[in-house]
Length: 217
Image 1: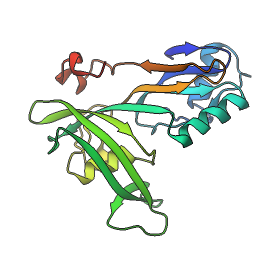
Image 2 (image 1 turned 45 degrees about the vertical axis):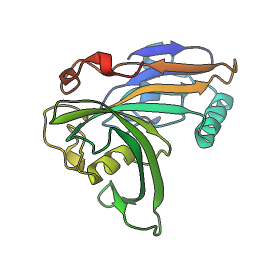
Image 3 (image 1 turned 90 degrees about the vertical axis):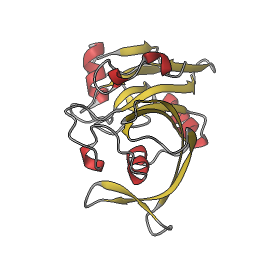
């Protein structure tokens, strides 16, 4: 378990693909307790990554910290930046995607729909093209809203499926889904100091198709 930062109130760690974010057997809080050697540690999930997605997460170590971080998320003060590799090239080098999403519980998928309906939610993200080889493109994504499978659904709707995302129309590329929680930023509730953490994705396909120099500083 890669722990990036630890203090009495928060833990910043890298969630591997295949691990759930929530406090269930085999979930991130459980794995963090094992890594810290304290099975009774109070470790609370305040935001989530899809099970198939990897990258940075922050966890609270007490109810007060969990409440404050959750408040920052609701207020839009919690900053999350993702990197993704998609098949195809976006029409514009940067832009905003605004859609209405509807979650299908039966299919366990999220779809873009034409107009609001019962259960639908607005979804907004900003993206920037970092590089492309004509077939694959690396994009930087800043979430404005945080809907289930939002990035995957919005890019697939534009015929830009994420590499490795078989659930949303991507090919069987023999790799994990190419979506990485690259940067998180928030105010530490204990100190009042804004903290930013960044970790580059692993040097494996499809990330190795691009020079790390193009990644955001």
